[in-house]
Image (cartoon, rainbow, N blue to C red; front, side, top):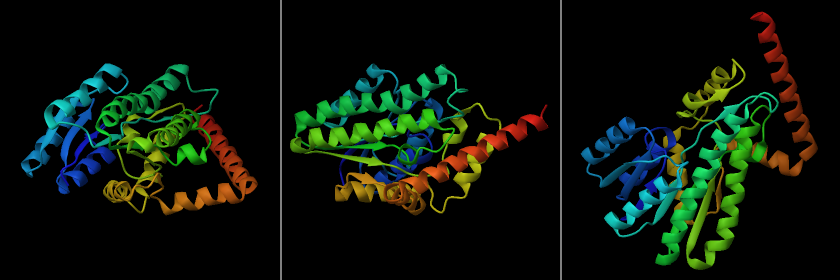
Length: 275
């Protein structure tokens, strides 16, 4: 593989695993992240292993940053084959409690950051007549668990955006893959904003319990991209829940409602204990 691959959120978690997997396959990489120190350190490690890597600090909420990033791909590598919109953050808490500032924050990064990447990449790929866009959504955007509405909505929007793009761009030789992973060990918990004191610990427990890690998911993404698949649900448990939701929607809704009731009870108990 000699493809030019751009990855946002590349300094940690899935972004790091994806860049390692594509580096192993001989891709020319353009890595982006807001974390300058982590980004440059990771890029140096990949270069030490013989990979061709460029790194650029990028805030995906800023359209000009993203356009500048992809302009560098064209100037330095002569084009762009694969754009991976991976940068993301998480917000948790009841709809009535999560402040609007957190809603805007998660949407700016998870949705509009992806929109910026898709728009800039699409223009380049349309001119080339080929390319692939890979958007990292989440099972949360399909299953919509309670007390995660802001995060769920941002990821559901990425799924909708991706399916719309796939329909628009296929005839121009551009493929679109949307990835909906479940919980796995990543850096997402470090950026979590939550109105519930216990949410961070609960999220970390779920991530650590995953049977697959970021490396496994990265390999699955690359394989799915090579096969030209439109959607990937890498977690077996996530696929099972998705089937339940589609085939037995009332049963699924009752389970989600029961989850919401238990979470509210736990939060109430915690409030009493700390009173």
